[in-house]
Image 1 (cartoon, rainbow, N blue to C red):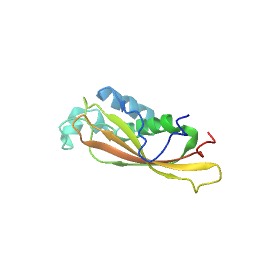
Image 2: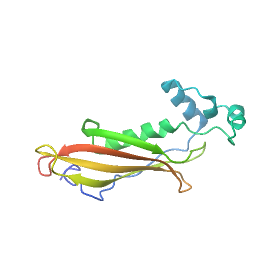
Image 3: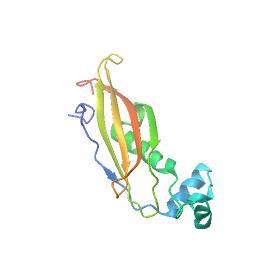
Image 4: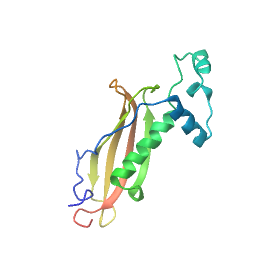
Length: 144
């Protein structure tokens, strides 16, 4: 049985635990994205803005989360993806990426199912860094 056939409400993706975040990670992401806000890499600018230290670029984890979801159910199958930032992540934080199927609709196009998943990025403190939601279209069970 393929993973696509075994999908049902409550099916969970294998968690992904990332390495501890570093300011270098933030700078690398900023270089790729062209977003050079110094509060994400310059200690002086971050503290002047009222933070204890530089903090993670939220879209860094959002991008990893999108890749995690796509790796689970297939990039070619994704139809919607959205996120909500919840709390900041800091250098040294270890982020855990998880996903769970929340709905399976078989009234989609013939021969397909729509799969809704809830995605979460959690800090080692237990705090939620961000939440995500995605919809995938997969072959109907038995057609995969």
